[in-house]
Image (cartoon, rainbow, N blue to C red):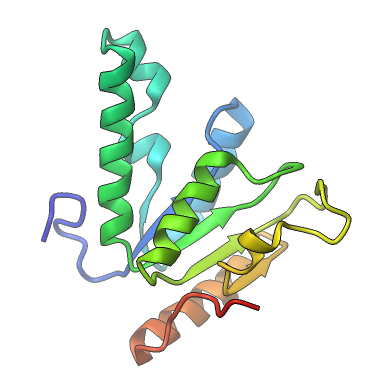
Length: 165
């Protein structure tokens, strides 16, 4: 087992895909990670993978920072049992879109939390986003029930990614 999962094999590994640029986003992500930590070992890129701007501030070249962030986060996605995406904002964050697309291609189950009703499309999320997600909840409190559903489906071996609609 890799260093990302060392000592935490008792809980499934969840990758929390989320925008991570503003102070508010980072705080919200930490709150969600804490809640999910009751059920999963949570990989939060801003905490566990490093931030691009921090690496630049520490003297890494732009390309070194890109390579480090990308490779660490891809490794975590490869090892994740499940992905939860934060979908808030007028449009989904580009990094989150890539993360759930990559996880879907690996046949990892993907779920969403969307507390923000704003959307660019009048019909909701882009179908290429909605098609990846097995379920989307709209309240933070709903994550408890969703987490239990995910754990049960993982135990039964039936957690799969969404079926294209």
